[in-house]
Length: 82
Image 1 (tube, rainbow, N blue to C red):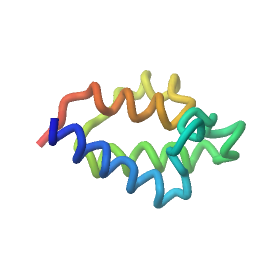
Image 2: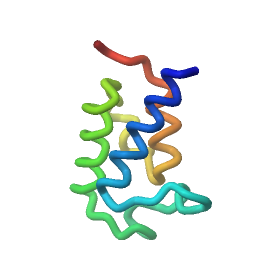
Image 3: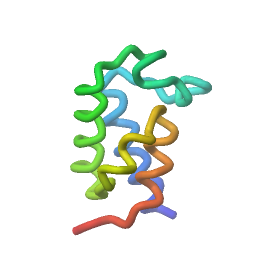
Image 4: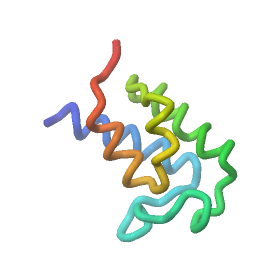
């Protein structure tokens, strides 16, 4: 359980560095439509989360991610690589 808490805390810090709040319904905001993020910045966010959390998303799964919640859910399901 501590590992999940630590992982989630690290993820939240990365989101905050991109100016993305995860409180309330904001975690369900669409990256491009609501948050108005350029796809390049979304890819950068995903890369930084993968690097910080040591979890790697398959490229075909990246295209399905549209909200911060979906991204966090996917990252939490992946095994950590050392």
